[in-house]
Length: 294
Ligand code: NAP
Image (cartoon, rainbow, N blue to C red):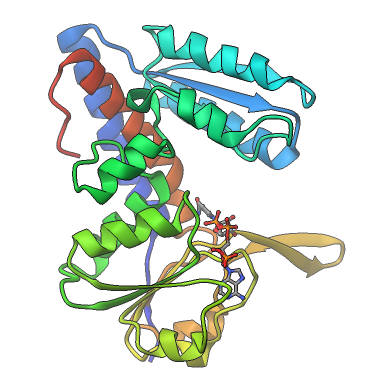
């Protein structure tokens, strides 16, 4: 038996087309063009690629895109002044401050200043709290992508055992909240958890967000389970080349799982598109226009 491969790329392409359509409608009906601003402090090559792709995708969808590059040694006050200016800028509906930040800039100080209405990564305490309260309008992009793929490939997950490995603010914590809100029985695991293989074997939905290549073994997967692999790890591919792999031993897990997300082309493909969805929603909410049902 081999599991179904969850095609995040195809799903993301469909969602992106719907966002583009709604963006055109918003402009035609209300003259509103969603604006996404990215702020990058320093020149980490991976972050530069992420930020560039976000800007390109925003423009391709029909948004206005603004980019601010600050030097690696920019003082915290300069970063905060940029965030404040973007909070006040009416043409900007979504602000993304690329993390991680250099050590002289406190992430908490940036997030506490960031207007929650423009927090399209849903990292502020306000948006995290709204998610726990079941009232979030802007939801973290990758966890949202996970829920969309589960809806598409599994359907109703009510009563299922879901295990989330990893407890980051960016993914693990919001992912657990969303699974709980969808009536799964949720367990969270982390580096101090005991008997991770045993916890995994009990999971109907196994979500790995650890950041360690091939960490989850094939024989940890419950037969027929749905596996969501969030990890992005660069490993040696021989001949001086590298490749991206997930946190799950994919080839082994594919033989046991009912369905599984590949890396790349799985959950990661949905993240950037959900950032665009959040920006569109933020533009609607800030303008008093109903949020489209996409
Ligand atoms: P993170 O902040 O990197 O933290 C890793 C988590 O894994 C922590 O909660 C840690 O536990 C846990 N962990 C580490 N070693 C473990 C072990 N031996 N057993 C069990 N748990 C262990 O998490 P993140 O930011 O969510 O990133 C995780 C991975 O997902 C990375 O590869 C990242 O690149 C990827 N990611 C991808 C996307 C996407 O768009 N596809 C989005 C977000 C993240 P402790 O808390 O106890 O230290």
